[in-house]
Length: 78
Image 1: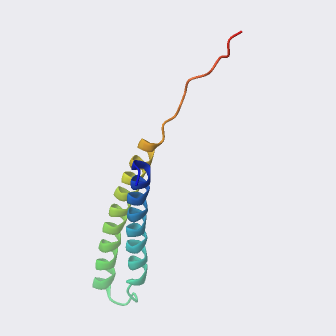
Image 2: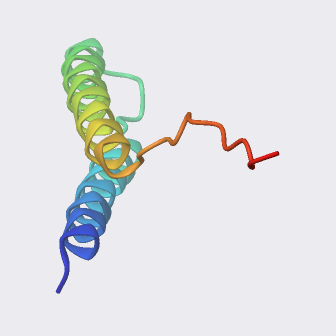
């Protein structure tokens, strides 16, 4: 497996982990009658958002390393 495919595999695994965390946070929402359960849910959701932001930043950095912009212009001979 070449290096670029390895980077995309890592990115896909991180995206899968983000998706799993988000779905879990959605499904663990309490019914709303117990304030302590709501407080714990909000704290856990905040932690999930922080983890998600860090993972997205890592994925962006990983994919930007692969992107190499060629900013040179080519002028044909006269």
